[in-house]
Image (cartoon, rainbow, N blue to C red):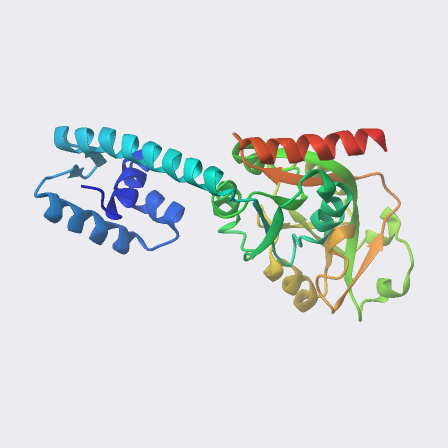
Length: 297
């Protein structure tokens, strides 16, 4: 009875939604619905009740779900046993990379500890920086990739993943190259008077919220909202509107038309490794290895 369509069926049952299952499977919701319809025709069974309030397993669907889970577990155990017998083990860590979250800092850490992971290799997985879709990427930890690395002080991100801080990233100001402030080596708060400064919207990042309050205390500074998460459109807006942007030192080279300048303040955001909430043993071992390496200096 094993059918590849069972994978989509179990995912839909676990998610309780065709749309959420489509996100996890990285296909369209239309494709998911077609797969479920094909499975129902193949089995000649109705597996889901579809209502205006969502979907639910039918009694027949509950039976298929239970046995599908058992088959998945037995199949995984059989493959693992066969790989062990053949001396073959999947030893690949998948690392996400994007313009705002490049994987190079992870690689730097990896080459400090990789001697403790003999046989492991890295697979780099690119993804897009999109403020509307970044939470889906965070939720893909453990599926699409094992690790991401970058600045993280987001309440929404930290609800969806674990985070190992490895450093702190100072907040800076990005200035268009034609702006009068671009010739300075370092800015003061007084330099921001009379300027429009784009800042992340309040409520998601405690570090940014503290910085935002500091700016709001200066009536000569006009604070403009960015989306909750940055993407390249925010940097483009800074260039096009000839305004300033609160940014991070690790993003200094993100946009060629911007100059990133340090500021005489003490604001910073943690920078580190993001990984899934319930990591497999090798991911957990890597995180602990890095933690010990950092503690030892």
